[in-house]
Length: 453
Image (cartoon, rainbow, N blue to C red; front, top):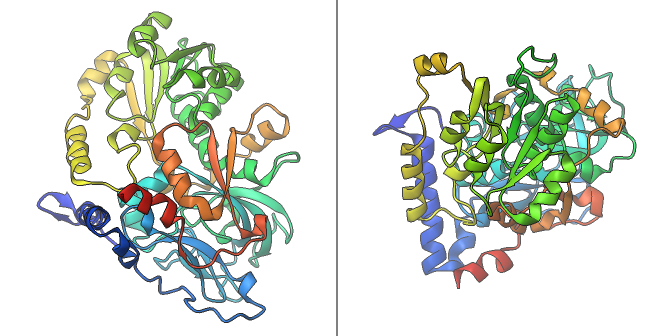
């Protein structure tokens, strides 16, 4: 299932398909939860009845999403012999799978025996069918995930930077929920000494997002000449927020103000380097932010979306920049599948999204800059080696990591949707655990049927 930017009644086809698919999942879950397994499309590349031969343990095991829906769509699949997962820029074919044995392996590619991958909120949006780059570049089925860490299994004929056995980490444009991933070598870096596989898997997306945000803010790679160096970071105890706080301090930005949503996250944000932490659960966020920086902020880092965008802009100072890299509050938190009421809420939130007029922005001397790294297939230089230097020198701390086995992916999605996690969730593949996960839905008895009752 692939979708182009075609519209029906003013709506993109991808959104309409996502709406229909999620409603089917919701109806079946409410009325006949025992039928949920029948909503899972068959993956054509799956070895549905693998023979018990000596090659079974070497085959790629991945988590595939067959169509938009709830966590029932997170299905572990053993691929046919010779297949691995890949990002959309690893092949000219619009497919989440690729043949990795010579001579099919692209000359610039690395075959990674993946040990660990991290969970991002974007993965939930992919599962719901609401992540544009996923629907445009891949479609369904899709293997989600961006962050990988593992050991080089083989390399293409043109690869000179890595050799078989090297410990590497990096970012793939989807395909990370897998025990074997093929990706361009330019998207990988050597894991610094002292960094574990799980820690390495927690880093790429959040670190690259943070550093590019600071680039858009005019603070990287050269220092801005502007005098206002105050920074406000939303979700300062989260994955991207924690990296932003640390990098802002490394780049001599000050003061750095961090916003958290719960009192138990205050110390985490302070330990990362925040000069001031605002706990919006116990005080008025914008009153506190205004008092902390009466002249406004040089940069506000915002991934919240509709709940804070306008106020974030209003609290910029002269020449301030609002950097936008997510819209979490536009999407439901805590719900596995999108019911009709959630779609109504999302439509209402979309209608309330602020509009920034260019003439008014010129008079205010403020800017709004937004980005999505999952479209950066041709921007290999964004994979910045400076991050590795900071890690190696102990200047940049890995996010707090909570480790889970790959078979608990449903639980991981539920945890990240709750909004209560601190740091990063990392799942370990069979390469790290030595386990083999048989094909089938993951954790359905625990995470689906219990919520349906």
